[in-house]
Image (cartoon, rainbow, N blue to C red; front, side):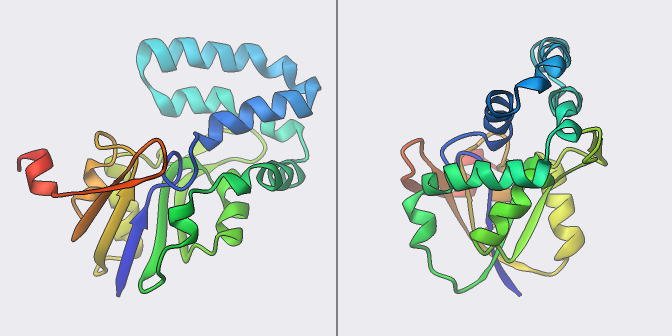
Amino acid sequence: MKVDIYDFDKTIIPFDSGSHFCVWSFFHYPWIIVFAPYAAYGLVRYGLIGRNVAKMKNYAFRFIGAIPLEKAVSKFWNRYEKKVFAWYKNRSRENKLVVISASPDFLLQDIAKRLEFDTLICTRHNRKTGAIIGENCRSEEKVRRFRELFPDAEVREVRSDSYRHDKYIFSLGERCFHVEKDGSLTEFDYAEKYKE
């Protein structure tokens, strides 16, 4: 099987979908302001000090059980789907499209259908508490989760905005493309970039 792997945030869209959804939700569902101290605590304690993104997310997404989640996600993507980068809309469909992201499953499942991903691999969350189920789908975990589903897949292309965090999925591809802030693509040689 031949596949192309894409990151999602700042790769297919120009922003971080999880943090964007948090802010959007606070504006659209003002009663969840009661969860703001949890989000602030998680950001300060784990995001800035401990650098533990998974624990920070457990605090940040506590509010999702207090909103009509499916309706909220649908409204969110109705507003932001148009921000998808042009390169994605115009891509070829020769290979299976696998999107691997650290963003929440509850947020990406709707847009995955709209954008016709063949497979979505992302961070799983409890829809009542917002807590992460299993591991945060980031860095080496992306490769582990990918190989769990596609042990023998041939990865033709990998596209991501992050040289640092997605070094591991870049290592799988025959061709590697870095997505710039303006949505343009820069092809690079993995061995030369990472000197391995």
